[in-house]
Length: 182
Image (cartoon, rainbow, N blue to C red):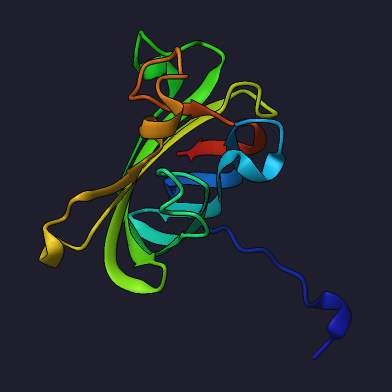
């Protein structure tokens, strides 16, 4: 009734929500000869947010002159991601203390528009910005076709990571961010 007297307060207890986030994009490049168009290149970008077990995920990988040029202009696009595993640097004695974390996740998606392909992404966020961030991407054919390995960045880049993990390549441009919120 009396507008100047309508004041009050409300206390709300909010349960903390766990969030793990992996996002970024960039390129790994291997120079071949004197012309940039001949270079091996994998470019990628996307995000995966895991909020209390619910996931939002979208990644795309573009291939240029890799796999003996058989995969030139090939594309992998995620349709869903699962089994996100992250390791903060203080959980493993082999991690560099400057690392912000390592992540691995699996994805289903399309490869050149064809469904039922899968991928494994492995990444390391090594401080900001991108000082020594690394990535490894493996693409597999559909299980109905035997699930064979279609491409692995290890084939063209080898072992470039000096931190714990499996054969990740150093980013030539871009940035990866792995974040943990409890």
